[in-house]
Every structure is written in C-alpha cells, then in structure tokens.
Image 1 (cartoon, helix red, strand yellow):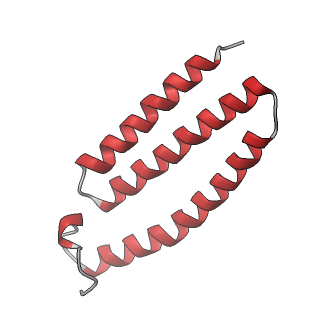
Image 2 (image 1 turned 90 degrees about the vertical axis):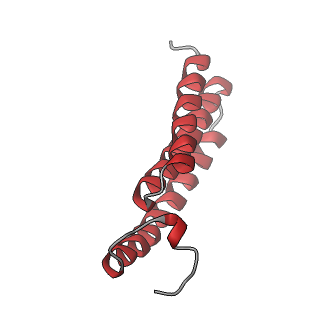
Length: 100
C-alpha cells in the first residue's frame, strides 16, 4: 500500500504548479486549466485522507467538487470562447472592463 504522504506530496506539487500557472500566465485558457489542476490536487488530497481515515465523507465531497468543476468548465469555456471570437488579442490584463 502506498503511504498517504506520497499522495499529499503529489497533490502539493500539482497545486503549486496550478497556482504558478495562474500567477505567471496571462492566457485565459491556460489560467482556466491551471485552476482545474488546483481543483484536482485538492481532490487527490481529500481522497488520500478519506482512504487513510477509511471514511466515505471525503469521497462524497470529491464527488460534489467534480460536479461543481464540470459546471464551471461549461460556463467558463463558453465565456472564454466568446471572448476569443470577439477579440484578436486576448490578454487577461486587457480584459479588466466588460466592454468589447
């Protein structure tokens, strides 16, 4: 059996890479994927703790996080694709206003 610490280390690395992607990159799609990576890192940590404690609550929370992430992907990708169609240059710093 793999120790829980290994899962937590992988989860921390994934979360750090996701946070770094949100901070450094200015492309909305890359930022969106980085946020999804951070959600998956949190899910991995929740599953690791649930397996260690042998409880089902962590897995239930992960199920709801995945459901919310799926809704976020649906709405977020629709907005990002609409912005990509309307603008030639897509930079997060330039999208501070809601005007086109």
